Length: 142
Image 1 (cartoon, rainbow, N blue to C red):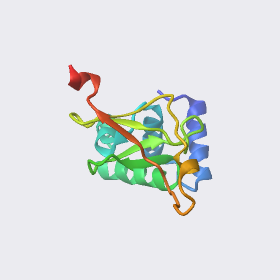
Image 2 (image 1 turned 180 degrees about the horizontal axis):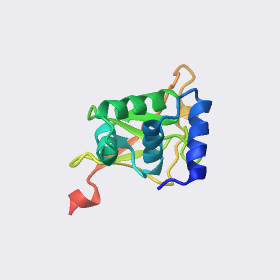
Image 3 (image 1 turned 180 degrees about the vertical axis):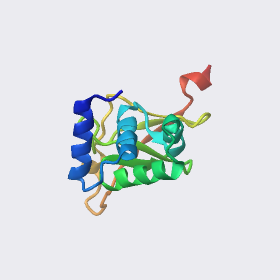
Image 4 (image 1 turned 60 degrees about the vertical axis):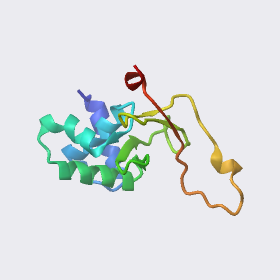
């Protein structure tokens, strides 16, 4: 359960980005921030199912939060958007993700940061960097 202080901080952050601090938007932001792996729309909707919000509302909130810069949206080649929080300790710095080729699970690789922007040729204008490591997760390898 989210504390009153955390709730007020989320509301303030949403309003600062000129977004309404609706209960569903707060719940989606809190869910993504509390997850240690990027979540797809389906995963977020499943986890928020007990709150009875429709899937379209959850999807709109995910895209609104990404457009406002509070979430990062990524596709790891399987045509499924996944969302992760953008915050001070996990902000715009590039970090690789591990993608399981069997189950499709995605995890951030902790403690690994890259600086591809610094080594790119001057003629290249990088907008974002996505780095993936593919293989079998522990569950699928067993």
